[in-house]
Amino acid sequence: MPLRLHSDTPAVPLAGAEEKLPDSAVSALGLVVVTILLLSFGLTMLYSASFTTSGISFFKKQLIWIFAGLSCGAALFAVGYQRICRCRGLLLLLCWGLLVAALFFDSVNGARRWIRFSLPMLGDISIQPSELTKIAVCLFVAGYCTYFSRFFSRLRHANGLIPLCFYIIVTCGLIWAGKDMGTCLLVLATAGTIMVAGGLYMRYALLGAAVAIAYFAWQIMVNPERLSRVMIIFDPARDQLGEGYQLIRSLMALGSGGWLGLGFGKSRLKTSYLPEQHTDFILAVVGEELGLVTIWLVILLYLLWGFFAVRIAIGARSKLGMLLAFGLAMAIQLQATINLAVISGSAPTKGMPAPFISYGGSNVISSLIAVALLLSVAMETLRPGYSDAFLESVRNKFRRKKQ
Image 1: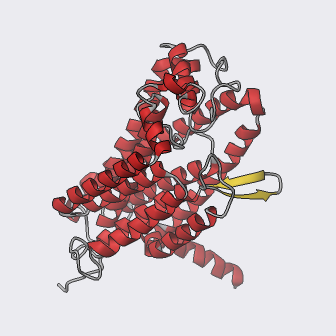
Image 2 (image 1 turned 90 degrees about the vertical axis):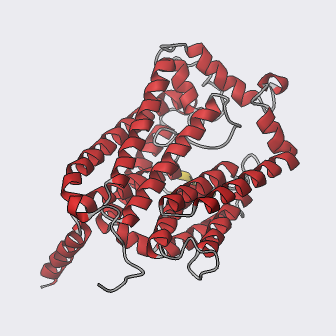
């Protein structure tokens, strides 16, 4: 049998694939159900968190963003993750261009993460390129580790580890230029997870993690603003009207809600007291209105989402599908963890929305694209070549119409 250097090698023996087909179907169904629950809960809480200050404008916009995300996800699912991954380099370059373009727009709280424009009927629109970059990085690193699996752990090879690290560092550098440290860490952790799952030598993984931790620690120490943001989590009361303001209000919201909350729509801190109550800190409103029990249920839903995503990865028919699914699961789970850590004062305040729940077009679209790609991996396991059959049927319909 000839040696294929650029093949999508099986992640599990094909002889046992039939036994794993039911698992993939159950995991895909579970992922869809949990996603619907998170989206529905997010819309409900968005209505409550923003109604007193903005009416239903955010609610209506979020519905449009969800529809856009579902449309994009359906299109990508039909094309299939394998075809999409062939364009991984182009997608990463496109994200680089968007990250550079964001640097030329006006800053918000000192950060340049958004591209702003206006559309009829929708008004002002903001796109955060770093949200879409997470998906592009998962596709790129998963494809690189699959197609160059024999070489990517070698340092000096043309398709080795150094070229891959170059692409990741450039991506993180552009995100860092927009002052988005949280997403930069998330991208590095996601890329590292995919590389380790792809067979990276552990000594290189540990060395890379040590270098990244040392660099970020140094950046925090030499920057008074970042250092103050880190130190404030230990004593937020020392700067109640400055760095500690948002954290104190978030902790007050969580504390006042108790076990069962004050009741839906009865939050007091969402009315001009808690900044970003409909985006990054929406779970603080959840804690105030519905209590700690509901926060635990949200955490359970995120854990179930990750469980089903990992099951899809383990049961994937191909190595590419396995690595991509692991990366997407890591990206969503880590983002949810960071958001929960921020609102509870366990991590410095960062602009990290809760996946599927927080308001924001880029957040919900990228999250639904991740779901679509995971479902594509599961469907490819259940019915290999499903996208080929679907696209061929579409072509045949167009041919008949022309005739």
